[in-house]
Length: 235
Ligand code: SAM
Image 1 (spheres, helix red, strand yellow):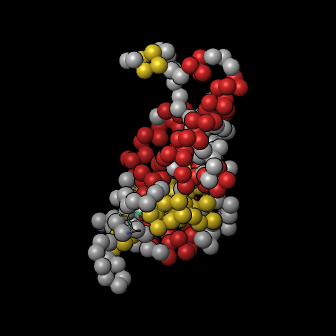
Image 2 (cartoon, helix red, strand yellow; image 1 turned 120 degrees about the horizontal axis):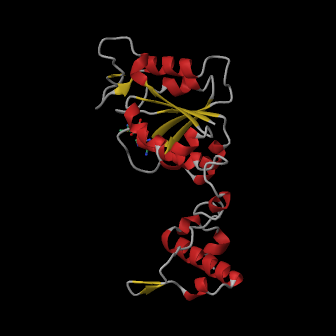
Image 3 (tube, helix red, strand yellow; image 1 turned 45 degrees about the horizontal axis):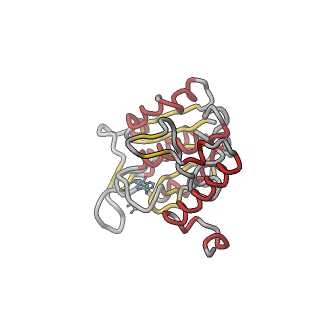
């Protein structure tokens, strides 16, 4: 998979060189390109924003540098199967299901907005070349799309085959099986007076699986009842 990121703050993405994603890049499981939007400006001040039509506070990102950036990354007639993701609080929620869907794409371009966002015609035009998704990280407002893109890239990247060493560890996670994950423990058996539940030390695999399922249900009921399917919710 290849991911390109367009931003006015390329330095944000230095962290993609560390940990699992860093290794995935070095092993070429993931190709990542980070591009400075200002490289597609032509004035002395490398301007990317202007005042909003219709008035109002703040500035809006001008379409021209974005148009040139997307022309360079997705030349007309090529890469019709690419997806352009615009992180925005006004987008569809980012979920594990969407991460999984995007993990099977060959090419994704992230367009990171700043100020009051990007001139709406940029997404409109991008949709003539590629599939466009406006995606929100959550119901709050960040200063820019960089942190949102980074979170999405991490969630998508770990689902790309080979990135996480043991694929089984991806199967039972929160938001994969429809429930939040059960609590986890490691050694020592007793820590500061808190003991690891006995069933986990019993070696009885069926009892362990049943306990974990019950814990996952209880946690989901308590913290995220909205995730429960209706038949479970009413029990
Ligand atoms: N005026 C915009 C609105 O109310 O929808 C918010 C602009 S925000 C200050 C600047 C940029 O941060 C957005 O263009 C977007 O790229 C990014 N951003 C902010 N919150 C986000 C969120 N919850 N999810 C994804 N991106 C977000």
